[in-house]
Image (cartoon, one colour):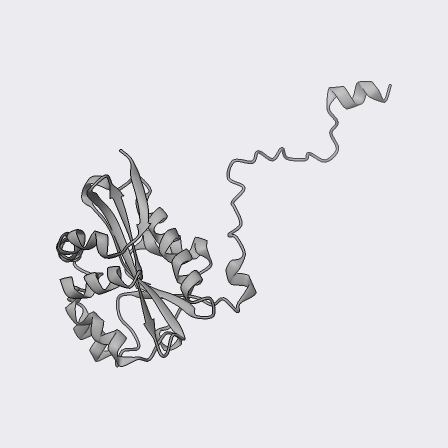
Length: 209
């Protein structure tokens, strides 16, 4: 296994149909999540270098792409997918980190957001500095929300006037200093000895003699 992650370009167009199929099958299996995308849409993301692709030689491992909204005020990290043969190996996190870095490089002043139903994606976003927000804090561009039409939960979004759905909105604001702070690690492995008042160890007692 020799997996590498690239900024996609025209040389990767041969994988576009497989990506579309993988996105569709994954969404159907989960019952929620990624909306269906056309092969033309995926190819456009590759040609404009607004996507990343993970490959094991010539075999597709994973993919994710960037969308911009409201005159680049908002950037969306979307379509994160990993081939079933490579799941559970940490590639989703590596792809997520790469598309996040690419987004910051291309659009350093834009707010980056993601909507997802997956707990794993929520965890990855949180570690990168994303914060959960209501849909009202995300783009109000109608074209973005039209992209949810391929999702089986689109009727829920419509009934709630595009303000609520099964997805969770997560936002990274480059102007928010706290967003760039690393998440504190828990002290789960640290053993703390309790202090017992009124008692001294034999070692400390001998020293005072």
